[in-house]
Structure formats: structure tokens, C-alpha cells
Length: 184
Image (cartoon, rainbow, N blue to C red; front, side, top):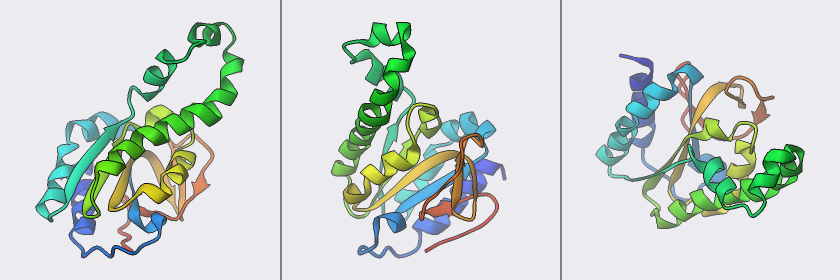
């Protein structure tokens, strides 16, 4: 069994457990953490995660952030100026882009029921533009079922490193990794 299949099995083990509906937002948040070099394989086999959720009576919705920056940038009035003066975009990234990404995910969360899973793919494309922790925090009040961030990087003792490059940040979410099984 390959690494992505192992992660899908661990994910299935988690979603097969009975769900408590009255949980805090971090307890409804899962991070499927995988080696960054497995990104293409994960995308090719992403349906394994949907099938696992559906097999256990959960609905599935997903959001792909691959084109998020390009989509956001193309809607900016001063996009051409940002290429001339890239330092001018920093503040807009920290506020507007992060909020835009959160809103994009929130629209999918609004369609999901309390028994549904929303998978968020393409998280690695946020690197350098937005912090996953900021996006996730923005969504805390929107999650009715479960939200799963497919996270290329590493996890150790509740510290996540996106693409193994960014300084780690601590967050209380349920990690699903190749190295440990942790269900709450």
C-alpha cells in the first residue's frame, strides 16, 4: 500500500467513528499531512478520500485552491502595477487575499450539512501569499460537519510546517499523518 492509500485508510478510520456534533472548531478540523513530494499522487487519488467519507454516510464537498492567487490577482484593479512594484502588494495579501481565500472556502462550507466533509486541496499554493492558520481561523464559525485541509508538509507535537519550509505554527486540529494515528 502506497503512502496516499495509507493516509486515505487513516482518514477512513477517523470518519468511520461516530461524530459528536457539539465540538469546538479545532475538533472539527482535520489536517491530512503528507510529504510535499506526494502532491501529484494525492491529487490523482483524491477520490479515495471522498469514497471513504461517502462509505460511512457522509457527504463530500471539495475546494481546490490551486488557482486562488491567479483568480484573486486577475480581479485586482492595480494588478499590472503590482508587477512593477511588488512590495505594494504585501499588505493586500495579508488582509484581502487571506479573506478572499476564506470566503471561497466558506461558500462551500455553507452548502455542507452537519454530516458532511469539506476537503480543501491546493493548500501548498498559498505558500508565500497567505498563512493557512489565518485562513482556518477565519472559518471557525462556518464549520458544521468537518473540514479537512490536505497539507503538504510536516507535523510534530501540534506544530505544522507548510512545505517543510515555513516556520511552524501550533494549532489544535486533528492530524492524520503517516507516522501516527490521533483521533479525538
